[in-house]
Length: 586
Image 1 (cartoon, helix red, strand yellow):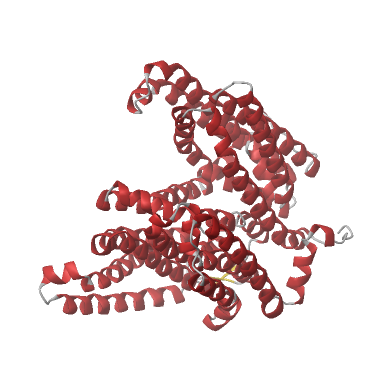
Image 2 (cartoon, one colour):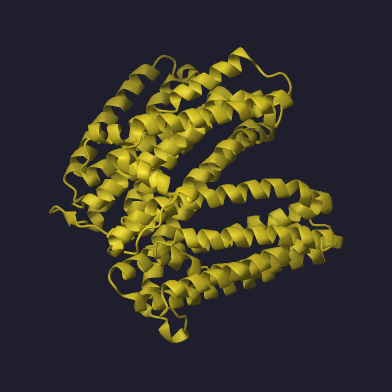
């Protein structure tokens, strides 16, 4: 078996391993939090949480670096240039060490400002400084030496890396319990965090060396060429990562600013479960980057991909999105009152202008180069297909059981949060199916497609969320988020289908129809919850658990019976540990 076939064969197992590791992490952290609160005061717990808010800004520096490791490790492996991986790793370590040194220095210098800005009491300032600088030092080491992990991912061995990180995470939990029991306080969390880093680094280094015995790190291997990769490709991914963080915070900023803190809190409760389900789904996306990088692909067509042409495309996309986003605003009651009867005419004009701009954009897209690679096309279709199946199974249950779930979790007084959860589950289920697409485009170094998608989403959210919040409050803002996600995702589908030369009918039959299978089980559990409404939280918990088990079993049976083909069933059976057969080495 050649390396390309090996990468494709490992894709499903790598994706599943990411989901399993994420589920273990989330469940373990949820169970750990009540125990921590028995030993720490709320001030100490808040101090520990604050550390990671600050560290998230340093973490943004690793977005592009991590993707660069994965993409170019996969490319060097595919091209038989294993020695270049050592140069890539050595350059990345030097690059991130410089960045982390700068971050820690800045953090040390602004420490007095942070202590004052976050109103930390004088008696706790020494402890806060120790925790801030200690976690920054540990986190910086994690960023600097994290290349071992991502080189392993680039070699398509996600499963081995996830085993290391999961085992290290469980040991960290044991260490936390031990340190807290012996009175280490919040410093015990820091010690356990450092222990996990050491174990992960040693484990990933050992696995990387076993996979590639020639792998080494040395200042002599630092190369200017690989440094350009971290600045070039890594820089583009860095911008996309920062834009993604901006998008995740944008809705809460608008809602809190317009509707107040109480509405922001209700929205946060409503998004918690969809966000958790989204984390499980998105953990399967990473392997698509390394697999697409390994396959690469050949571009066909005669249109040059010059910067002025790309700029014109971006301009048309922005203009079309802006005019489209304005059309529904003229049907909102506050706007109609202000325009005094002129809103229908203006809406028609905006609609006509949108159609004209879309026609021009469509003509431009048809003349662009396209990918002529059957393996990448199949990777694209299968990625969306299985992501949609996972998403529909997770989120249709959240929609069908929204009110019983919210009742079981926080009580009936948060019924509005359940309505928010319905809209956000719809939004996330659709938006998350773009994950494999953006990873594939990153893998073949076509980050412009992801930038186009984010531009559309940003414009729609900036215009629709404030309008929806002003017009209909919290439900209006949640509906605006869902509409923004649907429109921007449809745009990316349309754009990507042109790139891969896939017809609409085939796209729907392969990727959309399978996602409708859990609808019937979802309707069934919804009917049960309506006919037999749960009284009290304990009864609601039991109802959710029973309905959840029945829903999952019915969905899996229907997927198995009506959707999965023979090859897909064989792969599914291979991933069951006790049913896995030994395959002969390739």
